[in-house]
Amino acid sequence: MPGPSKPLDPELESAWLERLRRQDPAAQQWFAEAHRDSLYRTAVYFLGWQDGDAEDLVQETLVQGLVKLPGFEGRSKLGTWLNQICVHLCYGRLRQRQRMAVGAGVDLLETLRAQAPATETDVLEQMLDTERLALLRRAIGQLGSPCRDIIEKRDLQGLPYVVAARELKLPIGTFTSRLMRCRERLRQMVQGLLDGA
Image (cartoon, rainbow, N blue to C red; front, side):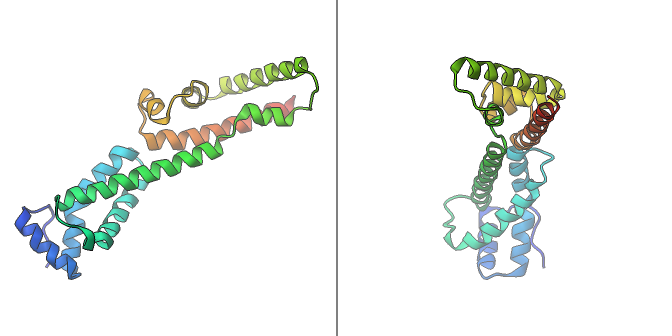
């Protein structure tokens, strides 16, 4: 018989926990149904309402909860304990995305410097830097408004991811994935300008 669809009072929850520890299928179904909605709200709070990873993180939280259940001491409600697991997984996913974004976001000025012919004098190097910077600014100017705003906030102003996302009124997960796409688009535009020069 399936369990209730919402968390129970402490005594009933304790009874379901005992059944859950015995790997009762009905208790496992209760476990998922009772906590799925709350965990989903937590995941979308961190990742954004349209983030496809939110549902995956809910599933991962439920799986980890079952695996770690023997270590659950009951000092907090089961839902609170699961929520902490979900928050930890969300932060892990955001850190992973940030590493990917930073890895993809090659310093464009350095890329341009590497592609330019080597010079031996500071004057020529300074002139090349000025030309490269102008080329980079020209490419940024040709980006559409959403990408231009994201690049300016993060790469030109150097704002932290969370601050830049907040200023643009974007969930952090959306901001990070868009930043990666915009940096790649900018890189391609700069390469196109170099090839056409």
